[in-house]
Length: 548
Image 1 (cartoon, helix red, strand yellow):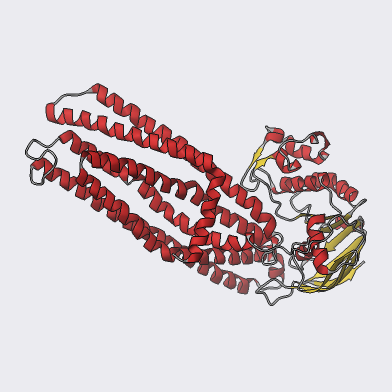
Image 2 (tube, rainbow, N blue to C red):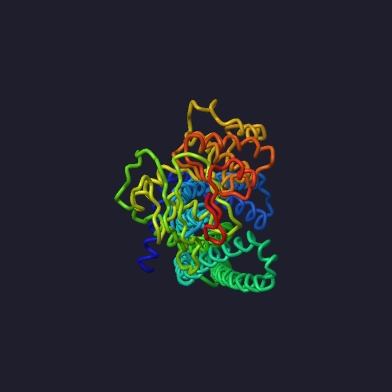
């Protein structure tokens, strides 16, 4: 294992402490579940041996077996709930730390940042909710069954021990190349998802320019490349499962042959020559497949480990980026914003998103940034928030240099993008950003449109980036945050894109009210903002066409 792999593994393992309680509870329940299954096998073998050897039916033995089998599944169910909870806790904390950093990262735009957070969350969740629990369960349950097997029949224990050592080794060998495949797959997913989204957003322009067929061929090629990468990943997963089943089949067959020969007196056993114990043989043979139950799950989840390692290697550099130590005086009163000869292009892209932009904006008022999709509106807004740093030109607050202004903007601007971020937690927490507050009666009136639809009101639980809310409701949540925690500069990217006409009429006065005391910058296609904006900036493919 390389040092990079070890570093990624350590990084992932450090996150386990955030859900230590849930993992410990799950482990205790897993051991109890395995103990119930051992007792079930003991009573079941007693029932079967008595029936086959002596023709006697022992109803009590069958009843006890049924009770312990039921206990096994109930305990296993609650163990899985604790493991799933642990995965949610850890991934939620990673997302809360990662997403704000990505918004300050020059390498990804807001769409790509959202896709990245979603993708790595999907990769981390199975690792913490399945791979880690199955690895712990494999160790605990296998250890328990090995003790039982060695105590009763050492040769059966030896066969199980050999398989326990061989199976993880062969999975490590297969996993060496799997991680590289996963990393390549994630990179392609990120790259092509952003491309597909861009083409979807500009479909009207593509059709109007009669460029549909070339774009279709271009996207088809990208889709085939992504499908090929996905197929390569799935092939590795299928290979690992096939190899596991081969080892499991051979091991169980070897145990069955050994016990059968011992019963026939062909192979020595502990009771050789003294009528081998049929009940013991049945017990061991029934127990053996369960020995591989969690090992099977562990191996099937090994694919999730490779995905998580690949994602961790992409996330770690982002989380570990050094922040400029030269901090601005973030309490300085805002008086003016100047942008001069600004040019911007994203890394690894030869195309400039913004060309020679120059603006002079006051300390308060409503500024409208207009332009077709792809004209650079969102990029300009992110530069003004301090999320992106211009490579060429200056962005100046109160006449200060760009580095100072960049730091000041990060702290003193609020931003609502087209894909609002929703924390895992209650609606109350997402609005007030506190678990407890006495400001509940001070929320904006437009939130009633959400509260009236939710049975639990403020206590409505939100998860998976607020999938319980519509796109418009997410924007209302973000707008409420901006109003409850106002900053000198408020920036809104398409604030009415997902709202119905009635809601737009409600929030438009709220936005205008914000602009009375601070600088509000809006990127929008809505013509209604033309009549209320103090300043209008027109962009066309990154070029400033008109500034009023």
